[in-house]
Image 1 (cartoon, rainbow, N blue to C red):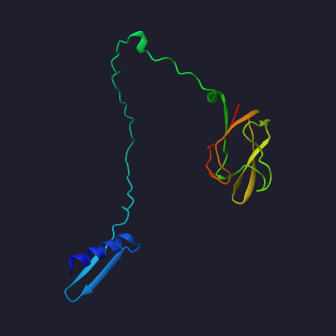
Image 2 (image 1 turned 90 degrees about the vertical axis):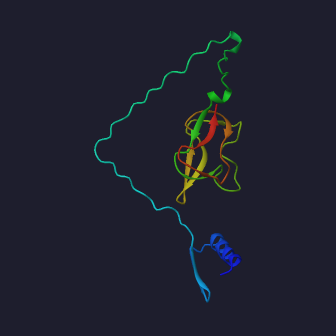
Amino acid sequence: MDLRKLKTLIDLVSESNISELEIAEADGKVRIVKAGPPAPTTTYVTGPMQPQMQTQAAPPVESRAPSDVPSAPVPSPEDAWHVVVSPMVGTFYRSASPGSDAFAEVGSTVKEGQAICIIEAMKIMNEIESDHAGTVRKIFCENGQAVEFGQPLFAVE
C-alpha cells in the first residue's frame, strides 16, 4: 500500500469518531486502531497504613537591613466584606422573572433574611436569603450562570 494513502487513512481515523479501521486490498491488508483512554486501575492496600511524618529543616534566616524588611500587608476593604455563598448547585438568577427587577443590585441595602437571588435546582426555584445585613458591594455571578455549592454569590459590607 502507498505510504501517502496510509498517512491519509491514519489522519482520517485520528480526526473522526472512528475507533478502528481495517482495509484489505490486493497488495495487502491494513488495520488502524485509535488508542482509547487508559483503562481505570484500582489499587488495593492491605494492612494498616502508618502515617509518615516528614520533617524539613527550617530555611536559614538571613539578616536584612531595616529597609529590606517587608511591611505588613495593608488590609483591603474587601477583607471586611461578608460573602454570601450558594447553598446548592443550580442556575443563578438575579430576579424572579426575566422582565422583573433584580432582588439586589450593587449598592443596595439588604436585611438579614431578605431574598437576594434565586437558584433553580431540578426545576424548583429556591429563593436565597441574605445571611448578613448590609450593603451589596459585589455580585460574583451572571444571570443564568451555573453555580456550585459554596460558590460566592454576593459580597455584603
